Image (cartoon, rainbow, N blue to C red; front, side, top):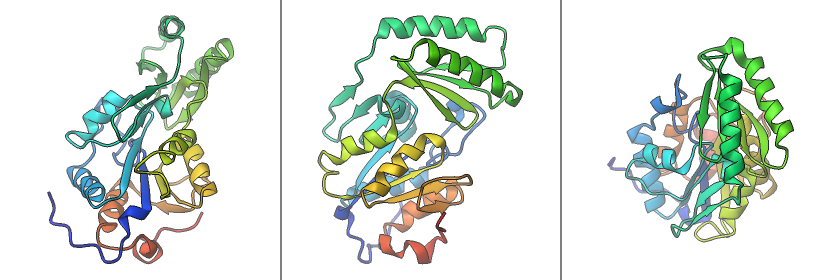
Amino acid sequence: MNDFSPSSGSDFDRWAFFFDVDGTLADIQPRPELVFIPETTLEALAELQRRGAAVAVISGRPLAQIDQLLQSLELPAAGVHGAERRRADGQLQASDLDLAALDGVEGELEAACTEYPALRLENKGIAFALHYREAPELEDVARQIAESFVARYPRLLSLQPGKCVYELKPKGANKGEVIRSFLAEEPFRGRVPVFVGDDLTDEAGFAVVNALGGLSIKVGEGASVAQRRLPSVAAVGEWIAARLTQPLSDIDKNYSEKRL
């Protein structure tokens, strides 16, 4: 572990930090299984939690994949945009879904993608993702397939566009609502929320954090309702480490975040 200097005035017990994974804590890779969180970032997150900050991860990935990326670091987490969640006390919660219907959707999706071998179908257990990063010319095809399944299963699925992906997630799952759920529980209750994300999937989280008087930070380019911006995943790691030695109120002076 890094020997982080003592905090100069950071009131760690005031803050509830929420982080997206892909594109925020970890660089996006050609395939999801190649993604990793840098060791220095994992160390900074662990130290942030040790000093009394409430820290959680919210991702479109399933919880099992989140835990693999976090390695030995145990954090409260929400997977599949909040459709499954592990509270700080370790209790697991999941959406009440028709699993038999989801099995049927999987088979139909596989059939729909058969003639497009470069279109990658990812089964997340309770959600599906159509990746076209390695075949950008298939973006319209992926969108049309995803839209057709949402139209066919409007009570089961909703469409979530992302970076080179269209996701079919459980109806009602979004990062804004899962942030509200965490904030209703210890150790997050009563704290000021901070959410860092990079994609369209994170906009609902930004909106909720803004409404609650917290701090929302978007990573990278693109229109957003977030209040601040960081340029890259590397900058996110530096920002987390800086929170260990600088008050969060110093944010404007120290990482050149700009208002959107």
